[in-house]
Image (cartoon, rainbow, N blue to C red):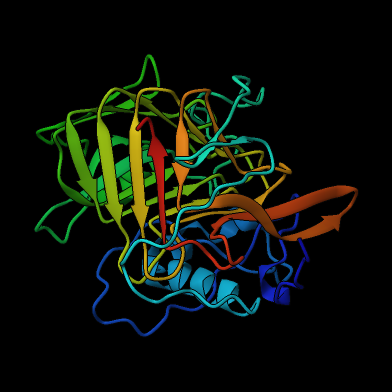
Length: 319
């Protein structure tokens, strides 16, 4: 695949992470998770925590969408599923779609959340969190929050019916849950979403912050994510070794008018993995950008359709 040059403001420095882009003018977006950012301007990332917390999700996701569009991709621009993709760089071809025949997931560092705050953006303490905007709400409920967020939010963790986080296993369980935005920060590469029954979300956004922001889908349930005009699943590794992994037995559908699954700025040459028995339809993983900085290559991966465009519909699961 041909690699397209990314705009300079999205270059991922390996150590000193990025000053945020200015908020986009999006009055319809009222959520404010910790955003992605751009090239540093000489200040330490540790002095910018509070500013980062005020930048809306719209800036981060809209910037990612515009950035990918700048590569020359021509997304369909609708929520309708695209055509099935029949081949894959690591899998074998089947009549139903792609089936990965390699059961090995990558061996990753930093499996646990950043409880010590070693990768925090400021001095307020650990900044890891799992938070959800419930369906019909405009406010995040924190199922897990580091000390920095307890200080800034002035409140503690909440309870949601159908969604719970287990710190011992680093697992978020969704059971017949309907929600809007699921936002995860610094939860490490061992973070798992366990699915029971039928679940729905509007978006899943994960931040690695140079530490680890992987997600493994597991369980025997299903999840449908309708991203609308934004990526349904966006993993912003921010220079870390992070990826998306899908266990056998679970079903995940990602729909978006622009890009269903995107893994930004990871230090891994592959961004999406799945077990034997998982069939993938609608897209195949591809590296859409790469750049080497100080000896490390950083990649942006996305699921693309059979025409090489960003896939607007991807399904992981057994038939």
